[in-house]
View 1 (cartoon, helix red, strand yellow):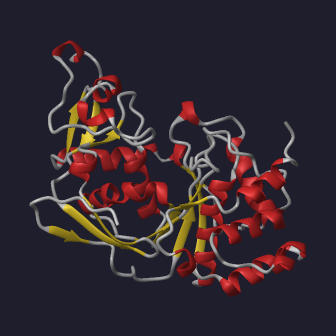
View 2 (view 1 turned 90 degrees about the vertical axis):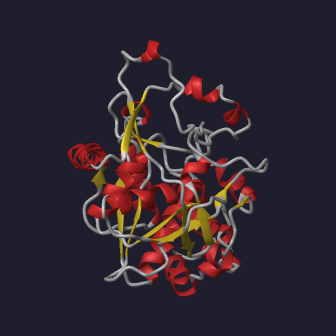
Length: 332
């Protein structure tokens, strides 16, 4: 459980099933090829949607051009198809959605929910409250900006004014969560200094536009949920149900990621990959399933899908041996 104490009243949200048909999604960033950690999120979200008679959409989060690798989006889609992960409807590309983000941004600014900020990352990193924060964790921003007047000529980033209140929600596998965004991260960016809209705003706008009812994703995004719930409330958007899957980590406990050069799954046997994910998610597939046709593997996975098997699991390296097996098949 993630708990942050404050003197404010607890705001409860995200505890009820949204009305209507289940609609989930997988939303990779095209900063590199599909790797095992991303595949866990894809398979988990796909099985949750299919076993609940719902739709499964794919959204490419290509909002940040410098981080997008040419050809990566097409490569990810080809990998999904090869593994048997078929999606519903057209793929949505965030790069086509800037007007929608701008409209939401202006609504928030008009309502007084945003403030300009000229603080640099270096200035924030130098603060005592940030010196001990783990690598990869967003830097804490204090209640007031630390940038001096000499930066007044620079274009500002825009931050959402995070209220000092506890946001409570029930994650379907991680359990009760209580997060205070003002304490854990402070006011957070919704539009960067270079004019690019930030992930937190874009994901909230897109989930609402696509009618997403249930978000199934990696536990590395668990701490972002309170911020997204605050934005949903401020924009009067529907609330979703959340399920955060355990993260795949290497033997040293580091998350498998594109930036960490996790192996590309494009050249591994599809059946081996799906069975490896099922093993990682504690679904206990029988050994002979690795020799079965891909359709049979998916049939078994649908019949035996039990999220309760990984309830409360935040990360795991159970597939390290299997990763080593198919890593040898990947060309250097």
